[in-house]
Structure formats: C-alpha cells, structure tokens
Image (cartoon, rainbow, N blue to C red):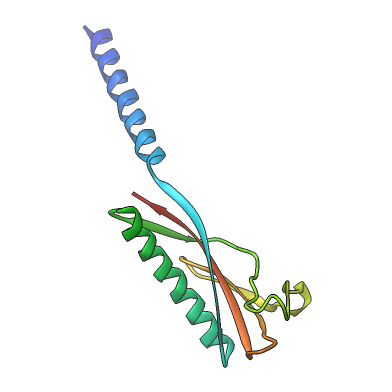
Length: 126
C-alpha cells in the first residue's frame, strides 16, 4: 500500500516537472537593442532605455503574448551614422556602463550629436 502511494506521488512529481519544462519551452525569447541620442548622457540613456521598453511592448502585441519578461543584456554599441563612424572604438565608451533590471546601456560621445547610447535587453514572451 505504501509503495503504491509513493509510486503515485512520484508520478505526480514527474508530471508536474514535465509541465513546468513544457511551459518554459513555450517561452519565446529574443535580444533587442535600441540606440538613441541626446544633448546629455542622461537624456540619451533615458531615450534608449525607453526605446527598449517600446520595442518590448511592440513584440508583445505582434506575437500576441499575454506577458513579457525583460532582462538586461549587453549588446554591441551601435552608432547611428555608420558612414561617419562605422564602429564605436572601445576607448571612447563612457564608463561605467549603466545596468538596470530591464536594460544594459553603453554610451559614448557622438560625432554629429553630443551623446549616443545603445541599450540592450532580452525579451521573453508567453
């Protein structure tokens, strides 16, 4: 009798674990990046972080997700005018990078604008 109860309990635990794994497997994730500029580092940083939030909400609507989780993810600095500055040299990055719960942001002095920032995030939706 006790063996039957233990076997039943083990089956329930295994089934619950399988359901949890199936639920995780259904989550679709993508990494996004948003670059923005501003007259100050703070304004460029805030604008790029808002753009990440906007992209997350657009993805949520586009895919019909009920919910999204957003986590900071470092991405490559992405200059606006690649004809003027094709890449951002590491030595001009303004330290430290700024990391929040929802975005990892790297900033540098711009060529055409005073400051430019790229924010990155990993978006997972269900």
